[in-house]
Image 1 (tube, protein in one colour):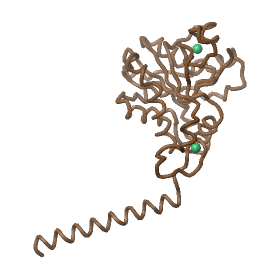
Image 2 (tube, protein in one colour):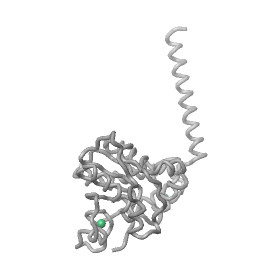
Image 3 (cartoon, protein in one colour):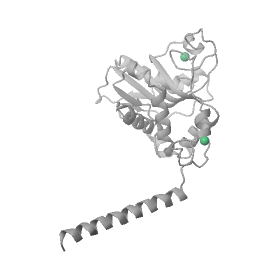
Image 4 (cartoon, helix red, strand yellow):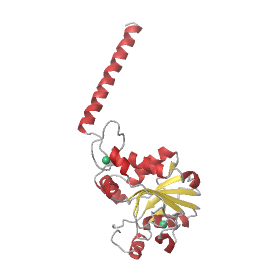
Length: 258
Ligand SMILES: [Zn+2]
Ligand SMILES: [Zn+2]
């Protein structure tokens, strides 16, 4: 076979696999069309991540918000929310992208309990946007996903904060330290407990892998900040081991009481 024929066959082969691949992709699109992670409507071609309507109505955390935990407050003259005014936190500062309500709340619940991992790129993009102005100030040297207990992870099949951390790591170029912080105790859902019992429930929950040397500035990452107990417990563990600056970023944050 001469070279020309050989090249022709190769290019024909390429065309064929290219065609097959795109046919396969359109078939996949038909079978599993991309859906809006907020309202679940089928996405149009010009809507790469979420539908236009939801994009307009996303519950972004807006000013005024608490300078410490990032929770929205109603009085612009105040620096801190009532929670941060009344107790000390072990973290330095944190931010969240969205309020944990309505469509976003349902979206996060679907991602966690119905395995919608395909929402992660949209979540990570939103977290990157929400932290774009503070990351250059905080300058965290690594991202630490708040870990799940291995048993819970096995039940769910994935660890959402690890997935979020990896996605955010690739968007921001910040290294992800996924094994440093470990969850040593299986905790029951603490939503219905009061603050004191919640604190007790979380005691000794996190530990650090002694093999990992942590840098001076870290960024904790989780899906939701509600009472702040989990974030405080994790921050306490880090503080005790000598980490100097502890920041956090979550996808959603509760309104909390004011
Ligand atoms: Zn939508
Ligand atoms: Zn606060």
